Amino acid sequence: MAFFNNNLRLITIIYNQNSYFPNYPSCSFVFPTSTSTSSNSFGLLSSCYTRSRIRATSSAVATSSPPLPDSSIQKSSDQEFDLFACPVCYTTLIRKGPPGFNVPAIYRSGFQCQKCNKSYSSKEFFLDLTITSGTKDYVEFKPTRTELFRNPVVSFLYERGWRQNFNQRGFPGPDEEFKMAQEYFKPAEGGLLVDVSCGSGLFSRKFAKSGTYSAVVALDFSENMLRQCYDFIRKDDSILTANLALVRADVSRLPFSSGSVDAVHAGAALHCWPSPSNAVAEISRILRSGGVVVGSTFLSFESSSFSPQILRPFRQLMNNSYSYLTEKEIADLFNSCGFINYTCKIQQSFIIFSAQKP
Ligand SMILES: C[S@@+](CC[C@H](N)C(=O)[O-])C[C@H]1O[C@@H](n2cnc3c(N)ncnc32)[C@H](O)[C@@H]1O
Image (cartoon, rainbow, N blue to C red; front, top):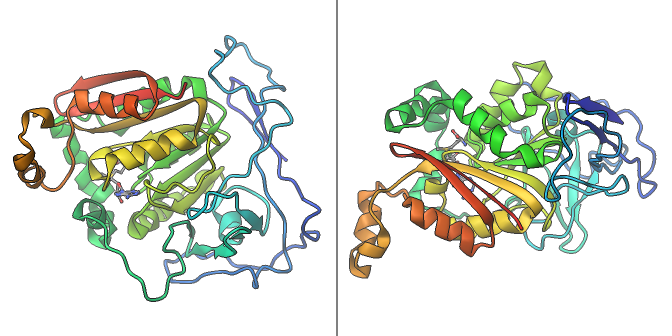
């Protein structure tokens, strides 16, 4: 049982030692500190089974903050949820391994879908929850805007100069962007935050360190970005042992059950997604009622509604294969995926937007 006090409310995280699995004896296992390839399996962990759940509660609140609006987190003290779901069928995964929601504990755990009978385990230090995890012969390539960030050089350079260039297009910089996101996330404080397309974890680390959330999932499709993310967090003990998990997944197939997530962040990401509409629909599916999404991207100032159908593929090419949208298109997309209270701030090509699940 662990308690976190973020000055606003007390969050209780309870790890249930479920009788479903035998008692959990201590595991002798060395958590890797290099990027050498390794994997674990259910067999390896058969002697240290447990089932871990996270429970967020607002019942033990000692706070001077104003009462939360109806739409914000008000989980009853009995409400529990398992975190990860099978990306194939969205059934909640059974976890076997040591308790705790942090990188070492998740690394040492195995996950299984009882419906598909498919197992998921960690590659190096991130949990691979893509549909193709475990395939032997099948290889799938995504569009360039996704594949580009899987490149080790691009991933290495991302926080070492690449991202700083965004400032020239109006991005105010990570500290200011984080502040803006935290402001939008107020109704989701104390809940589970998923940082989709986290890259090297620039914002996931800030969210985890803030203590504002019961747990943070740093999620990206790029193994190399997640590698960079791990390299950054392992240098900081306070983040390594924080409630932070590294997960590989496709934003179009998010490994969470419907309505199980309180907050979704997607920094500088929408233009990189293979299908923004599939991604936004997925985000809408996983957010609970009252849950909040905050995203940022580069704006296109040309509306596709003015581009004749025949010219649209060329618009895509001219946009350097990213899907840049106009502000109107972003608002329309979120509305069509069932969001309400859409709002945004714009500075040159930079847009940060937020919307809420009704
Ligand atoms: C420009 S980076 C943004 C990183 C970080 N969020 C930030 O604010 O700096 C875009 C990220 O989107 C990720 N991405 C692209 N396609 C994706 C997909 N289909 N599913 C999940 N992430 C994807 C890339 O791997 C990359 O890390």
